[in-house]
Image (cartoon, rainbow, N blue to C red; front, side):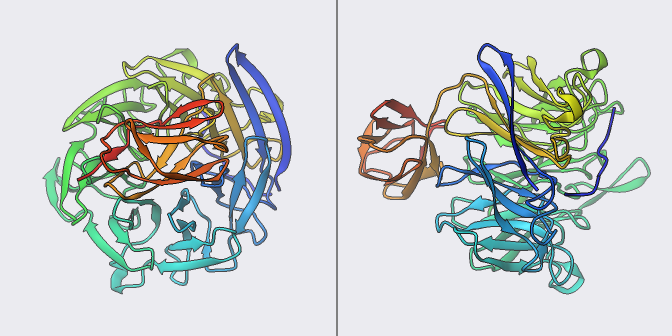
Length: 475
């Protein structure tokens, strides 16, 4: 099967290509990257408070150093920010929008050449470098950052993959604290030393409902094929699972993507290699127990895909959706659905149109926007050859999303949605809350007195919208 072949970057040419997949399923190519407005998107999209989707491209833009772009459901894609005016360049991770409206993220470059944490103003006019990695002696602060998440304490947390790698915390003002240095514990295995606590995280973190952070490394562990790790905000690290449990690696290895915590409390993820057929797996972690849900390339000619490089997303129907970077009917990757029981269905095989007009090599995962549809990107393909933005609709209805997904009584909450204008009610598990409709895509509110953990509901002129996950009221 084909692996990634980097080509020269080159503007976004707008085109909409619709292919009917089934009666309730529609795949739409929204835009094609061709260089001047970005090239080679490799990170998942996020939905911001203005209702638009935001993403990054590794290359292209006004200064040839990558971009942050916006996309809406109508197929309009606009360059939000072009890297190159500051020392940051070549972002490979998503941006994060904080409660101050600013966008935060990580990129390569910097005076030391080992990556930065950046902040971009809400209107995209100003980019600021908050931190330059490898600023400390011997690069003890890490290098090659892999992205950020905003935690419940208001700070950002992330990983670096250079050297053995680190886990770090950084405040919105740019003060960085290293929480863990990987490869801090060596064990002798098969005549050589390996990093028992893992080595080289390749993805960012997820914060669990217990407050701890969870992630993966692509190396280290008992068999040097990667680990799942758990780290407390204070920095105490534990290893729930080490990959490649025997010589054939039936559980998979090389987990390059972040984990997600599902509504049942378990964590789910992908391994890009290994499994029954050598082309990666989908797995579940419950405590320290690992269950392999699926081995890719289980079908003839790998029409089910292979080599997943991105995280899963749990949709409002309870199923998981994701992308496989290669394989499929045309050998350029797939979009799939997998049930909690491990039944996988291929929803789209890329390069189904002449010259791969629908895109090729999806290295990023999907996001389910509040209109119910899935949105994503491909690294290559499209009419410009440098990637696409696409939408996949499978008939799921609109919903609302809270930011954050937990908080104590009185804590401010932003509710994202679609067509929220004219909303007449907001409730937290049946307890009414005061609120303000900021726009058709944003409501601001606070956790009301007496609220319990449960579903957030918004009453609009067209019906009641429910939150995609339960809001957790903390003590």
